[in-house]
Length: 510
Image (cartoon, rainbow, N blue to C red; front, side):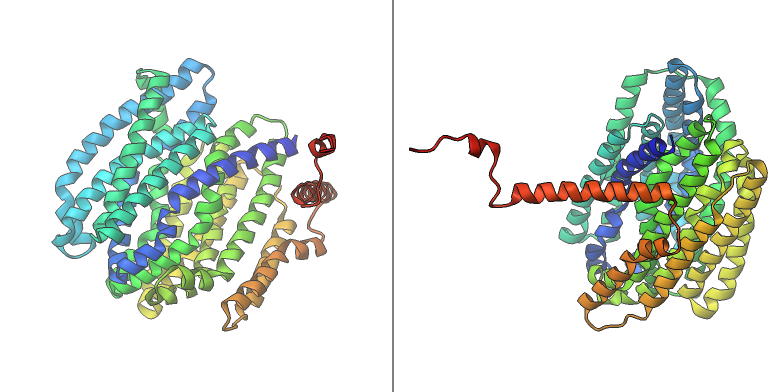
């Protein structure tokens, strides 16, 4: 049972991973273009506009994605599920258009308040339209998640990535229009893919509005808005405080370091959450639900700490290869940011009980306490050590947040987590990072080889500490044997001395 559930979750996570990483990795893989054609100050301006847009998304979205996942999965009839989808799309778009019309005249105000000059008003005008289009596209993709249509989700995500990359290159590298080119590319990608997907979904479910269901959805979703805003404070408010005490160049460096650290979130956590946030409600109906949560939690820590370790130890090499030398210092921030991201991602596990019990109103409490701590520490550390203070504050704040959520969640729905196994994962990861940090060869190739060897030793050290259960060892051996057999067969087929059955059956020329 557990193995079949794990395979199901892994399959959908992998498929969602392709789509999510594709759509979120535009900024990452475009780093060589951005850092070549944009100055650190341009990158700082873009970061501030992006963060402001991120705040506005909470206002636009109404956290309706959370409600769609819950109400769709708990609906008993196909008609109810169609009502959830159609009501969400139609009523949200009416609301979104009203908010957009109200906020467009405020572009100049935002430009002066956020950046300190009215000359960026046009950028904010485009950013506001982007927020509406991105929110619409995001809601439509959430519906695909609720329907477990991971392949369709990935198809649209890849489509958006293709369009965004093409227009990023056109506007920034060829036409060299600067920061506005990034905004144009995002606008075009969201408009094209989002419009097609909305029309497709409405064609499938029809035009029907159920105000009663929509009111229930809003009552569930609204508490997520302050919770999400407080998470924003934890994740992004340090840029605004950096703006008070440091220049745009330092914000640009910090933004690049943070972007590398966020690869962990884009690569693992977001794809996992796309299926997990819906699956936990499905699993809660099973007799062995708590056992499922326990095992999945351990595997989640294994994967996130392994990948986080890889990003942390290769940060210097990644930035030196992908960015201009003027951004090189950003690599020193990445390990600290990764630690914060690991604490942040563990929220997926520590809040299980709160979500299952439908107590979303408790989320803002933990996030609020951590957010206040975050602001206080930022104002204390940033004037002293700049962007390093911001990174340290992020790590501390997310640790406090996940700890508070864990304590509250366990009181509502107790889960027997495998604390000893999780401790082994964290201990080995910290030890390997400490050794890798001392690798200082002048040769890039030598550094990569040594660090890769250390990273690959992670599961081996765990085996020496008796981390794996007998069942897991059996599965590992079985999977390894099957993989080696498949590899051997492929090598035989590719061998120049291999004779196929058709060759044996062919008559002699004589």
